[in-house]
Image: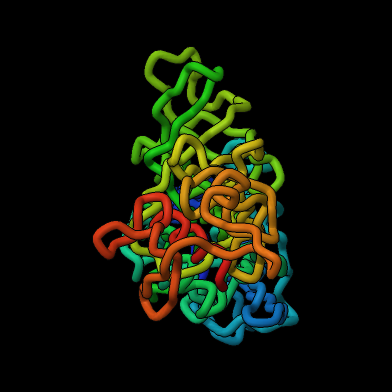
Length: 411
């Protein structure tokens, strides 16, 4: 009797999904499994039946899942075999041998030697028995869904999932982040989901980026920001989708410290950089400062520094003299570095007064009782302000920008 390679239904399902999700190893193994030949032509050694075992580890709000393979030798023709001629017979634990994924792969005679990166991808992809989809979204509701912890996958391939440990996963902070990205920064988001619609990963996409190769050479660019994911292979799928979508740059290091280090995803017109090149550059994103935005700022990994330059608000990946705030608080608000005058819009460093020195001297009178504001007051949204900040009952542009900026410091 010819014994053929036999794999369990769960193993076959995991291999199919891993192949769909980009694992070249899973694709190769599936091609071997489908061959209608004796098992000894495919497998080294005497094992002929394979399955998987899920090893679970509690990790707070999620479970770490690690897949190991089980192997055994079934002599289906032997008269003493308890389930003779039944390839799907129960596998008794005492007859099984546990194999690590790399050992399992090496059993296949006809497959090439794979790199450590390919092995790691295979291990990560096996831990999720589902096809993954990655799509670009831009609405506030899409951002909210991608950030909310209640929508996350209940499993991960690691006990240190960057998605599940994100400081923006709570409802109040997720809402502020969605508001900020949609209504203040004009960003989009790549979201990875499984077949049950659980969130597996996310990354903010900045389409309107200016790259400064030198101080006088602005270049239009786009950026895939830091990736948060439950599985390592999901991060790779998000990078691949970004490249296919024509996004030009991605973060070289998936962290919050290396803010000027990037990898080229697609060639930039007029530049000598090729896909895969690593570069160090300064980036800026102009934001619509007077567009509606309720309050707060999410923790920003790349464009963490808010600047006011020539009356325009910009998010940058570097600090400087024009920086008025940093966006690195886990409390959902900006941290103030300098102050903006509500009258003229200039930057100043005086915490005891809202106005810069010139405007302070212009609109205040020194009396024996201290500084007194000139003119009358005007009410706006339930609060009273100096009337010179309004024209025909509406805030002047500088004051409107000031009000928008002040919302960033409210969590």
